[in-house]
Image 1 (cartoon, rainbow, N blue to C red):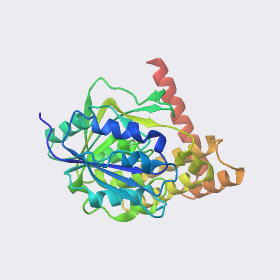
Image 2 (cartoon, rainbow, N blue to C red):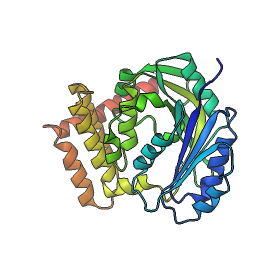
Image 3 (cartoon, one colour):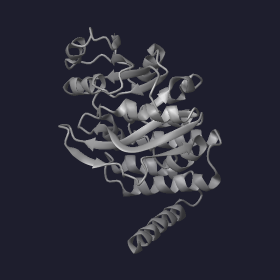
Image 4 (cartoon, rainbow, N blue to C red):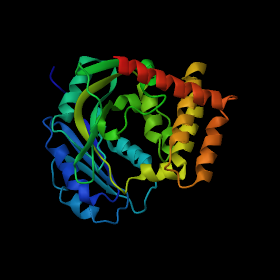
Length: 311
């Protein structure tokens, strides 16, 4: 089915001058060409402006905005891009990533297949700072799979964020019109909150082809946030938000708490034992029997490992 509709591509940048050319070129060279490009710079200090200015005259570039002060939040920049976007669809193309040239065309075709679709996302290739492949998300015997929003949230978004990189997704702009600003109050897991709210609005297409290249490098905020305990604290806050919104059953609540206790206990990446104990206590308060949850989670994982080994 023929793709159609203007796509607003938002590139929020902060100090990614090294990667900006590759990112912008991977957008401009898409096989699908009905898009506008909005470039937002959050007061970079690394020469990003020089790279961005090279593209000012490009016919696809409709907006270039420079912040006078750093906003302190990727998600505030997202919202700024949403307000500027004129397209029917939105792609947040993070400035240190890049994409296969068929990315827009492949995902947009899924919206044409299903009028109820609000989001489509692709498989991910994780690459290092120089673009060398580290790992890939699993393939499937099918090219893609459709999910109803509530089922997708239950099976793909409770324990972890299956839309692991904003750059791997395109979504319908109309579907975010009444999403509240809760996601903008987070520093690390705001995207997770945003996707959950969006997925409530309709169907989701999971495309298994690896069309998004997700760069891992030393200046990324996520590893630092995990070491400081911020990420696990925000995961706990997200859990409380989900509970208050009645998205999850008691059984799923126990499962989420058990998985996070296991994750914390196994981690050796926290900056100190005190930080690890702090986040462990935070999550343990969600269950009167945290040790039983931990044991049951370990036991379940062991059983699954044996079953898989037996084929």
